[in-house]
Image 1 (cartoon, rainbow, N blue to C red):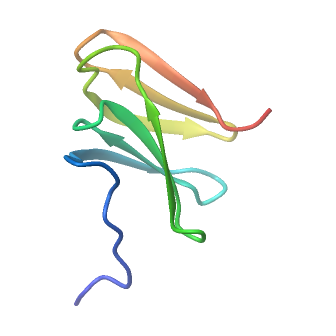
Image 2: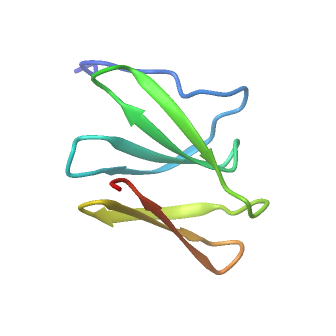
Length: 86
């Protein structure tokens, strides 16, 4: 059975790894190719890349709770927090 929809990830060399869908149905991805966490609004079909300050962060895990998205920079032993609400 084919997927209902598919979207091409942004950038010249996307390497999507982890996926998390938050409580507002926003899809969050980690992209090794861009060294970023990517926000995807499937209703608007808009990607927003949030570039990580640590080179080669390699975020392999992405989880969250209402208002927060958490990632683990495997290559740097750091946690990343993105607050999704003011």
